[in-house]
Length: 445
Image (tube, rainbow, N blue to C red; front, top):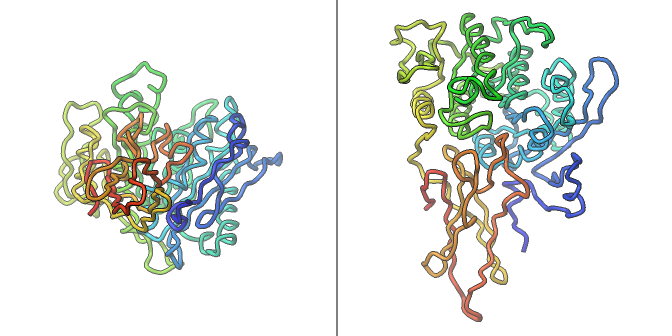
């Protein structure tokens, strides 16, 4: 029996013949409503995108008019680019998008493994134009033409951090907030590197967060990714010196993988979107300022993190401090930078639409906004029968129902909300219950 959860997640069906083409960029995940996809071929024209690219968007089925789009931008290299194919299917990021009446967009640039990443991660090389074209085309396909003009909230990893930061500098009036994981755009001239961006007053009003792993040059200064922190530090100092609304968070456990960063990133975006999205479509983004937030010394390399204070009570150097948008985010930031274990006291939403057909159970569920979805407990006749999955996986952080790739997207094949009861008593009617469990172990009602 096929689950009727199409309203919540994009319908998924793997084709074995397509899945076998491991070396290609063919996406085996069909984009059926509420998901839509467009793909553009590479261009040989000067200034245009030299790689093919596909964009998959998820539209919350209940939304009448979109207020924004959340962009989950992968990093460089073939593996990271392919990970972008599942970005729009992520239940946790969908929960954030749904709360704010936003679409969730997952690009996938088809960059060959050893090709030049700058040819897409620098938005001035044609990816900006392709991205905006995709919004117009996807808006037309989905019946949401406003997708072409709504604000953007951009998350980016590695080269995607360059892209996210670059888009904030190029289009500050469109970017509601941007999260830069393990990558930043260039602000100073370096021979052989991309042309530096200019820092404008408008760009300094965009909430930004630089996020990296401690093994990216903070504690490990010799490893493969040791150059990340020096680059981030230059960017952070230059932007904060201009008064930019910029935070800095170091994952104390990870390297270039994304670790547990989503448990800070999603609450951070939640606060920024709540503060900035206009009440009515077409109106400008609402402003924020240093005075609206909480501040803390950046503390990178220090043995102890100093807790943030309201901006009105902070007595340190504002222009070298970490800016955070709210008290709740400040609390989460303090926890995250200590051990990455951001706490949560709220249970996940209850599962819905449980159906049983020939001992096959299917159901629907939304992820917990704060803590995501680790899995489900199946009860039969009031007794625990099984867990789905039997052992949640995630090599980079908290175990998740959908597992997690290096680039913070679900792994393929996507996990399905289904369970077959192979020990049911023939001829007996059993009573079943499916309980959602978030990543801190809390259970739904």
